[in-house]
Image (cartoon, rainbow, N blue to C red; front, side, top):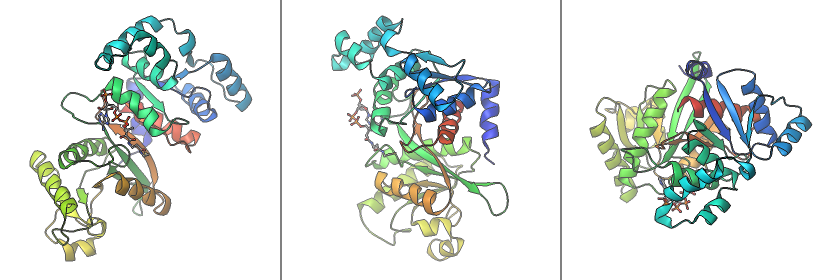
Length: 327
Ligand SMILES: CC(C)(COP(=O)(O)OP(=O)(O)OC[C@H]1O[C@@H](n2cnc3c(N)ncnc32)[C@H](O)[C@@H]1OP(=O)(O)O)[C@@H](O)C(=O)NCCC(=O)NCCS
């Protein structure tokens, strides 16, 4: 069963370096001071060192030992510009344009990961999701064999029987209207991520219909995506389309789809689009008392994750560990 201790153990065996693009934010500084107090994850703060040190002093966090890199006087900037232009050559980006773009912490930080100065990146304490994710899509790109970047949330709450109840939900954060084949890829990546968090995935493709009770192209999309995912992953319990009540309630499942190996005890949920997914995970978080970790980006060549702008320092600390442990 998932616990942060396991992720920390992974990092203790193989310590990593993580970039924070918003180096002077007090929540980032608090999380960094906690990371610096142990040895498993080294923070790299992007920004003006004077501003960062002043902010740390004002908020009372000890960040001694943190590496601070200022895009305005980065020694390897020429090399970074060259590499950036090469990566964006299909878009005809000139060195002058690259130099301007790389003054932005989000692009600069992403290039630090791309060039191997760091293993992972966490941003979004002040940047929007799109502004954190776009540099990753453009520069880090999808890993071999994948066609898209997607995301999932891991939801955790204490279980009535002891330990934690852990769920995975995808894609609640990136792909606005995924196609049938996108959903197959989203499901496979969500399954992989769920396993890292100790979940034995029982995967439900969610819909307003259960086993043909409703009609429409959205119903067909979820049913076909479930079938294709099952064909590619015969060992994983996968079913759909199904409604959420059939997915989680054994009583409803017995009535609506008694033969399903998933219905009644699903723990990994694939949503039809970002509207359903984003609303769904927030209902679980706000009304079901689950802690929500994510969006965890899936399918990228290196781990880069996005914080909510309303995040707390504790969430920054947790997401940093999750991000780095997945690298
Ligand atoms: C992710 C997102 C920001 C990308 O939007 P965008 O920057 O407008 O995307 P663009 O279409 O301009 O594409 C930018 C690049 O990313 C690539 N890209 C876009 N979406 C992608 C995806 N899902 N997977 C992989 N690559 C993707 C494009 O191919 C393009 O690459 P290129 O510049 O090398 O040609 C957008 O889909 C989005 O806003 N999603 C919702 C985010 C959100 O608000 N979530 C809710 C809060 S959690």
